[in-house]
Amino acid sequence: MCDDRTDNRCHARVEFASLGDPDADATLRQLLTAGPLAEPRLPDMLQPLRVRLRLAANPDAAAAAPASAARMP
Image (cartoon, rainbow, N blue to C red; front, side, top):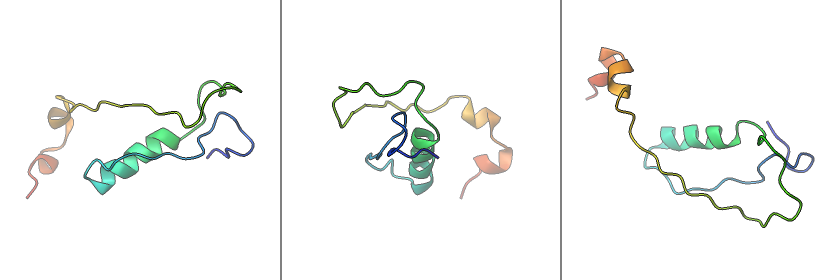
């Protein structure tokens, strides 16, 4: 886990609108904060940095999931 106070490749805070599923929200938060950025932030980079993500369903996900997972109540 990163410490933004000592490493300028870490995130101080991540905020996003809910995806409508608490598990999906937790997974996205974990992906966004799992490790340091590949490059350090530039000293004059404006904060906050806002990004827009577009998520699309994986068409192969149903084929890769076990049959029991596909039959949800």
